[in-house]
Image (cartoon, rainbow, N blue to C red; front, side, top):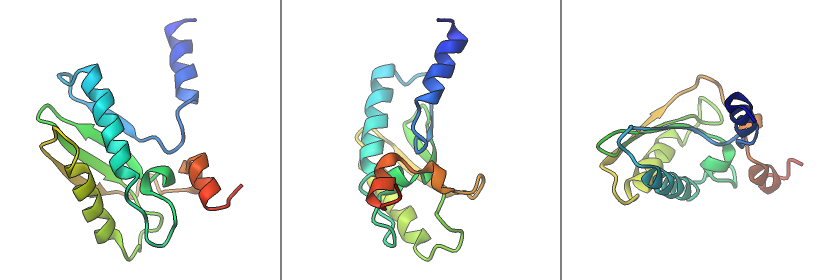
Length: 132
């Protein structure tokens, strides 16, 4: 299989809720895997108070960027621009990701481009919301 075919095959197996992960070049593959797993676990502890599902499975996390100092920048969205708990969710992300070992800190940005849509939800989220 050519490199292009391998990349295409990998791209089609990425779940719709998986964010874009960007790591500084000096972060080893082993550390990338650990940080990715620890961040996902942290995201999964945060629930939208109005929806019985965590923000990771809902597909609200768009991008996670880890720089050379292990400062983590998270771009996320909300299910609706007028979400009354936006500040609470942002603080929860800062707190949860801030507990990931070996990180300097976290900066969370709320973005609305592209707009969130139900197609970003994982199968787990669809099951928990009875959307199958």
